[in-house]
Length: 491
Picture 1: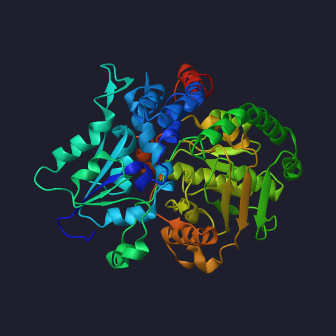
Picture 2 (picture 1 turned 90 degrees about the vertical axis):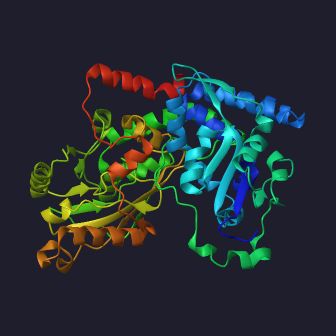
Picture 3 (picture 1 turned 180 degrees about the vertical axis):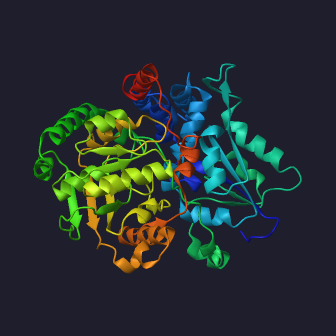
C-alpha cells in the first residue's frame, strides 16, 4: 500500500469508504427531496421486499427496484440538485476515516458504486478528491425525466469499466468487500475493516490531508432516513403539524414574557448564557445566523419586542413574526439609513452573515453594522432539532418556522457577550472590516465554530445554482411556489 507518484487505488463506495453497505437510506433521501412524501412512504413499504431479495441472493434486483421507485418520472435536474445540495452531508457523516486514509494515499483515485453515478459523483470528486467515478447510468427520456431504469448489467458494470480505465497497467490497490468483481483486476486487495495502526509507517503524512468538509447543505431531514428513522418521521409528521400550529399560535397571541414558560409545556427549550444588557436604547445586537427564528428567540429572552432587519424573509414569515421586521434592499446607503433610523428609536437585531449556515462555520460578516453604531452587543445563537431543518435554499422559506416548530423538542442556545468596548469600535479609529472580523472571531470562539470568508452568494451557488438574489414574483407565481413546496406532503 505504499504511495508513489504512479500508484492507483480503486475503492468500493458502500461498505468501504462509507461504513453502511446498504444504500437504501440515500434512495429514501432522493425520494423525499426530489419527489415527495408519497414516494418516500412507498419506498419504505417496499423495504421488506428489497431485504428479502437480498437474502435470496437477488441484491441487484432489489437495487433496481430502489432505483425505479425513487427516480421514475423525476426530472434529471431535480436528482442532480439533490445530489449537489442534500446527499453530500449524509455521505460525509458516514465516511470510514480509516478507509479514507488508505484511499487518499494514492496518486490516482477511482471510486466504484452500483448506485447511479449522478447521485455520488459530486460528493466523491469534490470532497473525497477522487479522479473518476464508476457507477450505473440512469436512462433519461428526451424530455429530461428519469425512466427509473439503468443501462446495462449492474453486476458487471464495475469490472468492465475498471478494465477499460486501466488498460496499460493494473490498479495498485483495490479496496472493497470480498465479492466485489473489480478486486481481481488489482495488484493488491484490502478488505474492511481497515486498521491503520498496523500500517502506521504508511500514514506519517496523513495529518495534512482530510476530506473537504461539507459547509453548505440543504434538505429538510436532519437524520439519514434508515427504515426505522423513516417510519418514525412518517408517523410523526401529522402530530408535528398540529404541534407547529399550536406553537405558532401561542407565539402570536401571548406576550413576549410569557412565551418561555409556555413553550416548555410543548417541548421547547431556551438555554441562556451570559447576562443580557440593561435596557438603554440604541443597542445593536449582532447575532450569528442559524435560523429565521434567531431574532424572535432573542426577543423572547429579552422579554420585549426587538425589531430585526431582514434580507430575504418571505411575506408569510413576516406575517407570522411576533416581532417587527425591517426589510433591507442590499443597496448599501439605503440600508444604512434604514438601520440608523431604527437605532434612533431603540434596540435592533442584525445577522451580518446575511444568510443561515447549518454547520459549525460562520460566514463572512458584512461590515455595514460597524459603521453605524458603537453600541454593539454580540450574541452567539445556536440551535438543535431532531427531525427537520428550519432553513432552506432550494425550497420556500415561508415554511421555515413551521418546520422548526414541527420538531419534537427544538432547543435554542443564546449566549450574550459583553458590549464591545470603545477601543474595539470604529470610534477608536478601527476600520469597519476590522470590527466585523473581530466580532465574527469572538462569536466563533464562543460557539467553537470556524470563521470562513464564504458569503451568501457562495452558499446559493452551491445549493441552488444561483446567487441568492430574491426576485419579487407575481401573486400567481407565489401561489404556484406554495403548491410546489407542499408537494413533499401531498405528491
